[in-house]
Length: 140
Image (cartoon, rainbow, N blue to C red):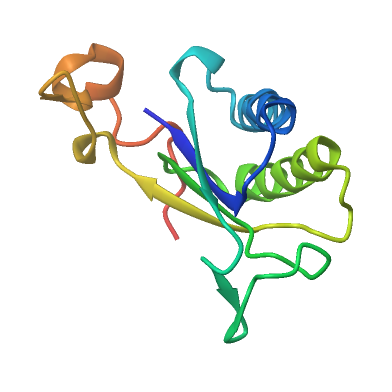
């Protein structure tokens, strides 16, 4: 099951709600996954608890450490391109800070690498057993 982890400075509930809704929409519209299976987790930090370029992020006026980690089944390159753009745009819309865009890492996995309710997805769901990845990818 796909999930997103977002590292950012402490945010208010309204901003987190906007990020959760926006990132979910961006992910689902880019990949075709249903919203019900996507989890979003916020990893918020206090001033001085993250660093960029060897300097602690103490001043809210300076660029903070912003990172999105996406765990998902293997995606086509064009889908990853759409996803990266959509997540970045969604983040900016939710925060209202166009000068602050997170770094995004997409960590892909086959269904044999995910366990839900104690079972591999490829064992638990017939649809997942039929294919290793969400998309059938062409061989290079």
